[in-house]
Amino acid sequence: MILNKEKECMSREQIEALQSEKLVWQVKRMYENVELFRQRMDEANLKPEDIHGIEDLHKLPFSYKKDLRDYYPYGLFAVPMKDIVRLHASSGTTGKQIVVGYTKNDLKMWSECFARQLAAAGGTNNDFVQVCYGYGLFTGGLGAHDGAQYLGATVIPASTGNTQRQIQTMVDFGATILCCTPSYAMYLGEEIKKQDKVKDLKLKAAICGAEPWTEEMRKQIEETLNIKAYDVYGLSEIMGPGVSYECECQKGMHINEDNFIAEIIDPDTGKVLPYGQKGELVFTTLTKEGFPLIRYRTRDICSLNPEKCACGRTFIRMNKPTGRSDDMLIIRGVNVFPSQIEEVLLKYCNEGITTNYQILVDRVNNTDTLDVFVEMAPDLFADDMKAIEALQAKLESKLRSALGIGAKVTLVNPNSITRSEGKAKRVIDKRKLS
Ligand code: DLL
Image (cartoon, rainbow, N blue to C red):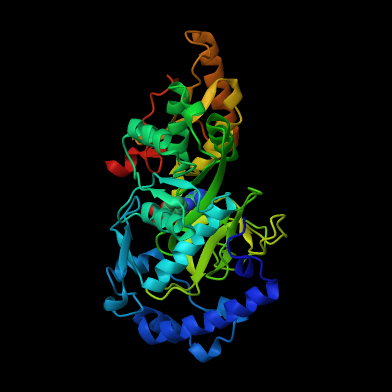
């Protein structure tokens, strides 16, 4: 179902006119209220009057995660603190946490954006939405919660943790929609199947995001739980979950273009790239009052798809982010993205391995080492060491040709890699820890 046809199905001309109007408004108020933005505009010799609409977007200066750290905690807020009604924060894997603030209007806009996702997944006010994203400073829990409430559904605010209780709750309360990370959905699926409780579920959909995941993982979640799994994207700096959302076609995520403008740029040159080309995703918040950002460099790598979608929504779609530009590992001088390793592993899923893996990078005797641990599928080979060694060797050879460097593959027992209740921790880089 389309929640807000008037918005979600606007013509391209209407979208662009709305975006232009909002952009002019946002630039003016940010120039007046955010010192760093004013400085950057002045340095670029730009005044708000020079921005007439989205055709001038490319002239505006970029903003960066570092800005949020440098102006921590409230230096980039565009309204007085009395108008801020909620704070969220993100710690990320490196560096100090960043904090963002929302006004009442911002929360309303965010709730509607997430509710659009729920509606696209078939959600109505008859649904029971179990939210297993973490509640707290992380945007996942409260973002999904407010969205479900906006839709009028019944929220089950389970938060993370205690998988057995999650399952019991899901069964007893009759949850119909699950919101959690894809890696947790996989884990829940495994447990529910093990306990033979799939038949006791009323679940019809899962809304998964907060980390990259593949079509293979989607297939596994859908098959194990007998549901549809939808991809939802967001980031604390721009808004939590719901910046973009997947529709029933499950072919990329519609960006809520009445509130955000997306661009893809070459991360090295900053040049805007044409539709379809992969690059760094950049967002401008058009309507956010508390913590607006212009041309924010997300460091997520993906492409945009302007093709008409069969669902009738006209918002442009972004393809699944395949990783972040700062995820890149440099191993023995070679650039390696974890997603390249995952891609190779996924090709062998029906030959005896699962999608549970962990990458370990270390430095031994001044040389970088790359280890990939992959769980075997239960019931496969059991003790057949020869078969295991042959598969390890095959994966090592495939990885070598994909990455251009050697990796040691070790097949490990089912369920031996720690499961995560939030975002999966796929890479351990011991070089950074020492
Ligand atoms: O992860 C917000 C969120 C919560 C999104 C729940 C979806 C569901 P952060 O902790 O700030 O916010 O992390 C944002 O996570 O820049 C991406 O790298 C990654 N990410 C988020 N959603 C997806 C997705 C939340 N669907 C960072 N696919 C982003 C791939 C995703 N990566």
